[in-house]
Amino acid sequence: GAGVSQSPSNKVTEKGKDVELRCDPISGHTALYWYRQSLGQGLEFLIYFQGNSAPDKSGLPSDRFSAERTGGSVSTLTIQRTQQEDSAVYLCASSLGGTGFPSYEQYFGPGTRLTVT
Amino acid sequence: GENVEQHPSTLSVQEGDSAVIKCTYSDSASNYFPWYKQELGKRPQLIIDIRSNVGEKKDQRIAVTLNKTAKHFSLHITETQPEDSAVYFCAAYPSFLGNEKLTFGTGTRLTIIP
Image (cartoon, rainbow over all chains, first blue to last red; front, side):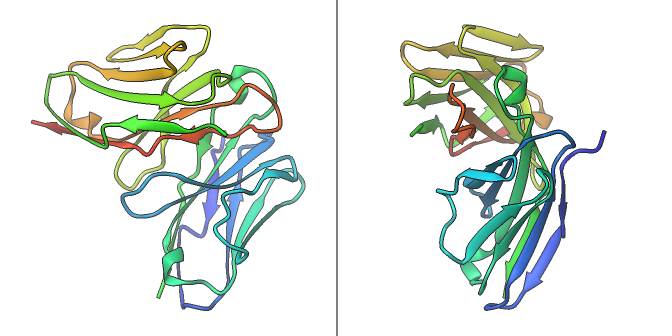
């Protein structure tokens, strides 16, 4: 079946503009995660959804960042008034969610490379 | 919350030798420990995982060991090959609903020297 997809794959934007990044999880996966990865760095957790709710938003760097998920499926990450330090690869992952070990495995999308000029 | 430390940050080994990457975690309630491999320019992919009721798991040339008492787990790669060159991330998962997120280590860049 189809894996996690993200769009766009690359986005170049000017400082101060708003951007929207999209994630389509694997069908049936109730948990969805956003991470940020700067060049050569680790995985920085941003936010996770269980269904349409976001139990943990602790990783969002500032109030310029927001995310939503509708219909328990597609999620969008919005960055307002982008800054150069927002340049990074934004990765989305999904998992079955709920209890039980098979539910924990996260499948990552290919990422969106954001460049703020 | 959970805190995962990973060592070393970089590791170079001769082709054919073994590589070991170690992680420690802080939350004794964590019960699932996956390892992800990320090749250059690619997405992270799960290569092996271990549950808290198991001490060791093997899959061909890779193995993971878990010491719950000491709260650490390790990735072992034997007979390393050039295609093993990548960044490896360990992670820990809590055992209760309401906080279903992985906490990742900071990554180890493994380089296999031909």
